[in-house]
Length: 90
Image (cartoon, rainbow, N blue to C red; front, side):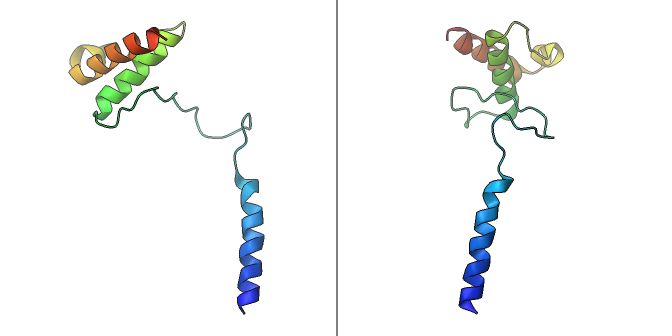
């Protein structure tokens, strides 16, 4: 019985790499936003989203910012400004 379980585990372990996503492969999931190059673990979600949007705006040709949220949410605004300035220097 132990040999049979070991055989099943080995077969399943051999099949798992076939489930992996390879770079350049197609995926049905939407494209994820790039991760900021800094650790934002101590900040709230609004700041993190603002930082990510600001960083994307600094590196690209198009501006990515939720203007309504920028005007009304201080955490988003500070995150956007920080992301734009830090990523713009790189």
